[in-house]
Image (cartoon, rainbow, N blue to C red; front, side):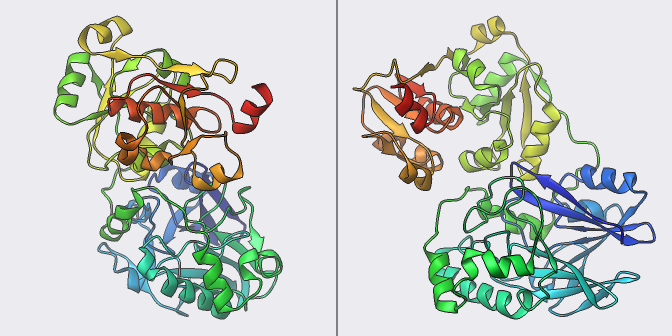
Length: 448
């Protein structure tokens, strides 16, 4: 074996792994939906992908194992996952001969009931362990994503998985988790190491705060104390991954170009316009009722949090923005109903549809008599916030918009992007005179 390559999706905070198992063959751990990064990496190394291994039914992204199976890979997955497409079910302590190397299955339920980890062995010597959501860098994964009523029982299962399966491994065993790489992830019980690098069993045993003190009561209490909200789209992805998603192949679908009249008809039929342009472009002029979600690494997270998966989507994009990247991010969380993008200049659009603009303000121009709504996560708000600001998390804003105080309102986050999304949601709910405050709470304090 020459190497273990890491492929990171920063927006979703996840890592997949391409493992050279010898004889020109590769193993992929927890592939995401778009197969092209794995195919490209394998091709560069003159390998073919022979195996795709799933650690669990993912809540936060659509798995790519079925895509790779269609290209000849054997899918490995826990028998408890009960996948409904062709695969090889595996069980605790089962060993798979990879042709020189061995993959030992470790039953590690907790993050999900069917969770397994994979220990890679060379002549019975541990090389690395792929821990999925069982053990993260400086953290562990959440156990409450399947409902509060199961969280405590799964936390106990995770403790036993750690103490009976993972922590007894040699200190030098390299740990490759799925969650927490390259960005934030709502699957982690706390901020995980986000530099994309691996860790070791010894390092986690010594420094992971969830492992000290190492007793089950303290562990379960610690997990129970760190509950937080998570995107709505999580609730449907397990079943999509169990069933097996639609195969998209190595060419992503293209967005159709829509005239303003076609957009209007689509909206009348139930479509929602997603304005993915940069924040300044949206503020200057946008289709009234559009939801602003700028095309950036976190795009898929907010799309999945704020819009129903089955809803038809029409997009507004800037000339230089990457259409393929937008489609990839939609498909990565199971959003398939992509109607197209608006293909009209401003004058044509203005003639066919109602347009709006959104005011942006800085601390020197803000009206102190306006209601200020901070739309960051509760944990962010508690760290620092503006005096008298109301905290309504962006993910809850649609449900609470009609309960907010009447009158002029300014929305706020850390940089302005989430606040502009909030302003677009408030506009959809009929609120007038909504502005966006730019700058973090610290910036506001310094400049006020």
